[in-house]
Image (cartoon, rainbow, N blue to C red; front, side):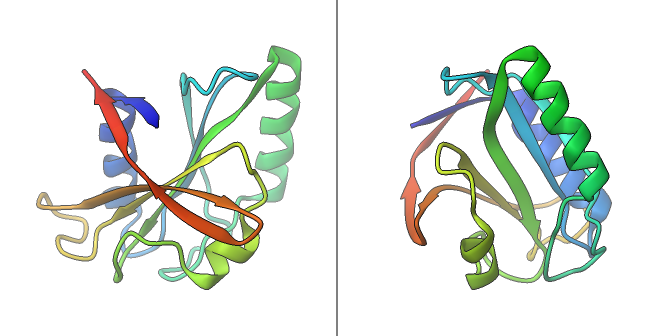
Amino acid sequence: MLKIDRSHVDAMIAHARADHPDEACGVIVGPAGSDDPVRLIQMINADRSPTFFRFDPSEQLKLYREMDDADEEIIVIYHSHTATEAYPSRTDISYAAEPQAHYFLVSTAESGADEGPVELRSFRIVDGVVTEEDFEIRE
């Protein structure tokens, strides 16, 4: 089960609202092998799209070098859905390449960029198989 800090959840929601109507994306990294999300990094959606996200390649390369130097790994990959529920799309599933990661989705479909309800869900995606998981928000 994913255990995630309230501050990280609030930051993901704020990022999703700020980038709406485009999808927001980012990661939370932590010590390798720990499954403990520690450091949130907002990424640029290189596609600037309301229906798809892709990390900027140069930003992603920089991130991987930083993680390698700090003995960190990706714990959470997050992105938003702006017009649909918080469930991985076929594209999300096909691009899921981090089997150890929790894939966290924030849907801003109901409230858009404004204050209001959002839907939060977490998944594991391994070899194209999507499994929803419970998550605990730590205060």
